[in-house]
Image (cartoon, rainbow, N blue to C red; front, side, top):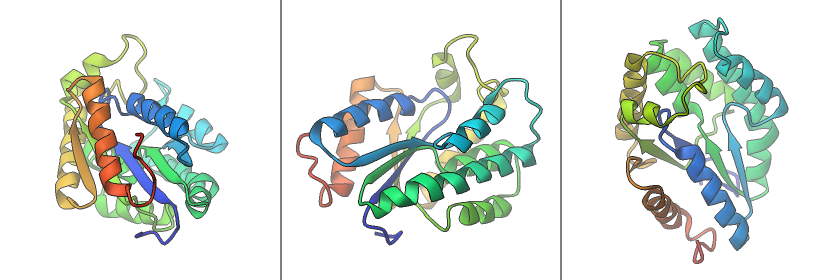
Length: 216
């Protein structure tokens, strides 16, 4: 494995409303049922410190500049990797993270137009060089994704202009094309059950030699 730890590292990415968080919950329930040792976590907010940072980042009306936003995400990730992700990988677990460094490239790089080289440097530092072995993108048109969200419950990112969300989606698709061996793209406009079936098939194919996914 690329990261050198006995565990397996998988990340899930996607624009707002693509349904990846719902899919993660369904997958976790199934992994529990078949006894696969795993960690389900999220970025930002996977640690106690991260939860505080998440509130600052996502609370509507908070005056957070693009650069401050980038640095806050990096701070969250540094703690997250050190406190949770690396220990789980050392323990041989399947680690599934809802968003990771690619979100920062898509949202702060493409969405906010911050310098991509700087973002990549910060991502490298905050993760101790850790990269996922597989990243699954739940792709969905911006208008459809935002239309799925609960009215009045939008966080600071979800409330951005539609043009921002178009840039984020473009960033994700470009990233997936740059590293086709790491990325798998799922059409998130399909029925929830169809998306879940495709997700399980991708994971079983990628990691079936490490874990017994026969009942997945």
